[in-house]
Image (cartoon, rainbow, N blue to C red; front, side):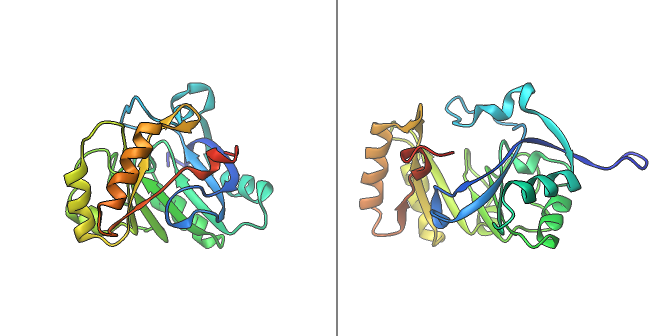
Length: 209
């Protein structure tokens, strides 16, 4: 915050939908998508967070007012991106959401900044490169995004031997999952002795955001 000016957060969009991935699939949630990410994954399925036209600088009251207006009956919020860890004042944002009565989840690659001092109620890590064990241990679930290529299998199985809630999810191919990536996820899940579960972007299958 500079002087008396209120802190503003870079927001790409705020919308209500059904969670389509991971442990909370099927739960109605309000998604707060932050703008910007330090990574440049060519297969990212949410490129809008890089479009300068979608960047809004909103204060905490503006964010909370928008959420209430969009979905006044939904008490579940998700901070996603982009990359939340790259947002200055992340702890203040999480704290404000909790004080407003929201159960707060956050999805992050684990890169872009430290984990917030004010932890979310649920932390999803989606690693794009190796992360320190202390970061992995802080996650409630770990979700690996798989390509059609046979890479990362040993890393995923090693992670699943240490963590009890590990998922694999196929990369998107346009608006649908890549069939070859789906097949690879299914094979790995079947061969994991029950340590890995399959996550699908079910919201895309039913044509919602």
